[in-house]
Amino acid sequence: MTMESTISPAPERPVPSGPPRSKKSWRDSDTAAATVFAAPSTIGLTVFTVIPIVMSLVMSFYNWPAFGDKSVAGTANFSDLLSSPEFRRVVLNTVVFTVLYLPLNLLVSLGLSLWISTMRRGRQTLRVLFFVPVVTPIVANVLVWKMIYQPNGLIDGIGQQFGVDMPNFLGDPNWAMLALVLMSVWQGFGYNLLVFSAAIDSIPQSLNEAASLDGVGPWQRFRHITLPMISPSMFFATTMTLITTFQVFAQPYLLTGGGPGATTETLVLFIYREGFSNFALGTAAAGAWVLFAIILVITALQFLFQKKWVTYDV
Image (cartoon, rainbow, N blue to C red; front, side, top):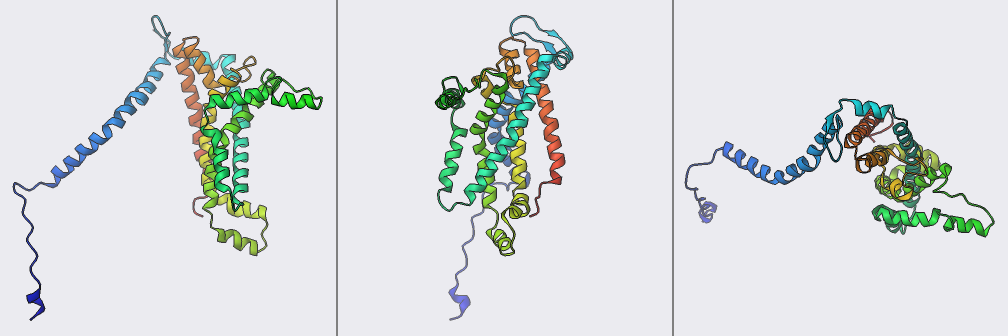
């Protein structure tokens, strides 16, 4: 018996009835399915993002009260804001907050992530503990820090035990901004800690081991191995933190209310008050677009200069 006689022929596949479908009909059906799946997100993006953005741009060129008739203002809202001492003050407060908050946040999160990376046990537990303030409601964080800062609070109580008079951190113009920055760093550094921890864990151990065998010290290993290899993560953390820092609102609104005076009033808090306290929606929209322009310029500069210090080919 030959091999050919033992192999039975494969059954013929049934031929579908009707005319064959062309490639165009298949493409049309795929396009229709993609349209159906993308429609909900597209509608949501249009209704809740695109239309409000366009409306805010239109409102910025109007005298637009919450109640009553609106009138065309042209660029008056922008010129009034840029010439207003109060607006320049809140912009300066926002810049001061950013200059203090950003390096502190990065130093604390990077330092702790480097320390945690050297541990053999408890690394995940510490990361979770440090991330807890990030997911804790900001109102709860502020209540805790108010009990720490306020007169007869934790710091004041410790000072009284040693006969030291502590300042009123939230009521003293010289201390209010610093108190706000420290509270914000504690509340926000956990996110960057996770970013840096993931980047440090991805560095091959063989590189540090080879450098150690060659007699390279810890600082030189950090400078020439760790820092270049985590530079993309540092660029991401710096960019995102800078953007969110310029948009800071909840911390000053809940902790100090922008006071004492206007020493901790930030740009977004100013926009909120113009819109929902003074009901000057046109001025608030113009302030929002000024904030957008500031963030856009700074972010563009970051992307422009990142080629000089971010390493992607290691």
